[in-house]
Length: 378
Image (cartoon, rainbow, N blue to C red):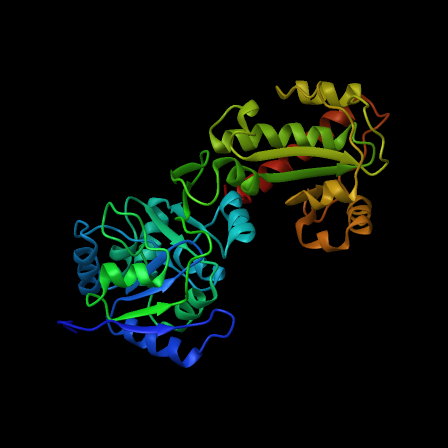
């Protein structure tokens, strides 16, 4: 469809009582190739369907180079799985904590994943959304924005309502001053809540990379995305300290970093005991069994299992069924994130046994850890 001279239609909406019929009309226009400004919690955006002709018109309107890639906007955070086939633990945690919200996430994809997406989405859509093995996605926290995105039948990008190099519009009047007569529609929901752009973060195997400062600070995002992994045994002096040390080693290898940099990479690995004894060192057998694998757990001190520790953990691995029952006794809602480390098998307690028993226990833990590490998306 060709869009000639026009008058921009303005529809005023109340976010607390949205006229859905008006939103549906707007969505039909966007699906047909129109450009429609709408509010988000950060700034106003210009909705545009992800098709070549519409994107060229959008770039011309904004004064940006043709072929510039825009951020995909989604109406529900679950839609991200259609566009990113394997989401790492840190990115998944950010999605759960922040979306809908003022955060744009740039996801890195492998070459294999890119080819999978090309086949799943079709070449045209794929080529308009993905660049340099990545895609940027945002799920805004604004009732009008989510209503519009929920009603469109085609994928939508929505860059800020401004000319390239200018500050973004943060209310409907500002949008009209800039784009009146140049876009088909303005959904005017009043002033934006934050009046500043979303933070843009790139997240892959390495540390978080802030591509644009915005509502969230680097420190806030680092804290929100940190993955906490907990190992549980009885006294927290044998099995779980060994599991913690062994897991650290293999996680660092997978991330391609030194063990002492796991925190910088966004991972915290700890262990605790159901006996709730604190401050004790690892047993001599556990120390020796780990040392034989090149793992130093001498700095470990026993920690008491508590509801607070459980609540703060994203993944929990127990040594046996009794430990899992203890976890769920303190926090029943942890059932979905708490599993036996060795799958369906208990890992026996070597306490008081000869060194060979400790070595065998460490071998069993290592095998289980390697399997778990292989299953983790990082």
